[in-house]
Image (cartoon, rainbow, N blue to C red):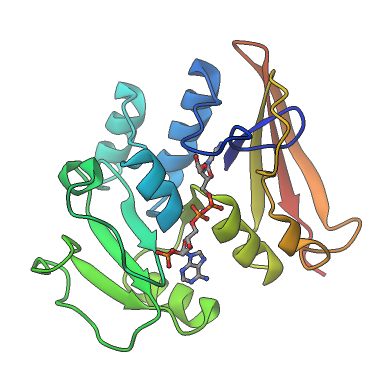
Length: 216
Ligand SMILES: NC(=O)c1ccc[n+]([C@@H]2O[C@H](COP(=O)([O-])OP(=O)(O)OC[C@H]3O[C@@H](n4cnc5c(N)ncnc54)[C@H](OP(=O)(O)O)[C@@H]3O)[C@@H](O)[C@H]2O)c1
């Protein structure tokens, strides 16, 4: 799920943390988080923003509580380098933090805290399908992807995204930061792959579109 400009950018031309979505986008983002067991966040997005998105809506929190779920989905940082400075506000947010990283060495299991890095758990990322199976086995079956573009492109190229949730925001940004990087061209599906599930006008002249992937 991404907030994008009308010309398909997810960040300003100069780069940096994008603050594209308004109140309407915030709500649909929280709705998606409220559905999720875990959310995947690219390391660059975390380094740029410093934190992950949290559910704040009382109704959404109450709904999760009634269903016996934790208030927030597990925040799963995705990184090759593991370079996520502990000074990031992310490490003080009221969420469980896991790290998905190409490595065979597992850090301590849930319940204990990894001394290094502030992650409760590390899941090895050898292949995406193996990593997703490990996450499912650990109880995280419904995953939301918070971006950014590199992470989204990787998952789309492998056909692992079931649904696209885009909020179009009334801005034209130009520049290189398209929501799929140019390197992703050609690898992300065929015409007819995506079926419109929903379109909804949001406050602030924003438009939510949700597309589901047709399984063939
Ligand atoms: N508008 C929106 O809704 C929205 C949402 C999210 C982000 N953004 C914007 O997007 C920009 C950041 O996006 P981005 O595309 O540059 O970066 P990104 O996708 O957030 O993060 C890229 C990094 O994630 C890790 N990574 C990605 N795929 C991986 C894989 N298969 N295996 C292991 N690690 C992997 C690597 O981390 P390491 O470098 O640590 O190895 C990689 O450098 C920012 O400007 C942010 O503001 C906008």
